[in-house]
Amino acid sequence: MPTFHHFRYWKKESIADGGTASDYWQADDNYIIRRIFIQRSDGTSLTASTFYFKIGERVYTRPEVPATVLAPTIDKTPILNIPITKGEKLDWTFKNQEGSTISVLITFEVWKP
Image: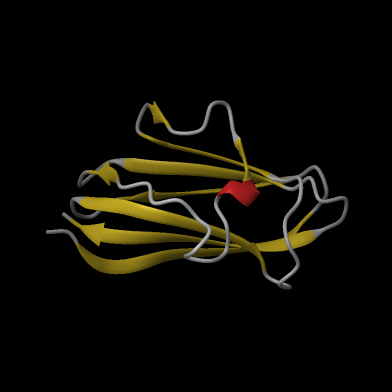
């Protein structure tokens, strides 16, 4: 049975309107990404920004999704259960379309198979 292992967290500050923030993570073991949480660091709701991510060549957003789909709370963000194997690279990009400069918190809930 899968068990919670850790949170993988990024804080991206001062993303200009229309600008993007990107990063990656290379898995050091076999994991399952159970949920992804996206929130503004000031607590204000996201309304128009988008999110893109892929693992290796497997794209999970076509071409991107509204960032609000990956909500900041456990009761609103979907359970994904996406496997990532040791050595695979996860790439993500957040595009700010909120009308002003913002900072965001991106958190992946990581489980062990």
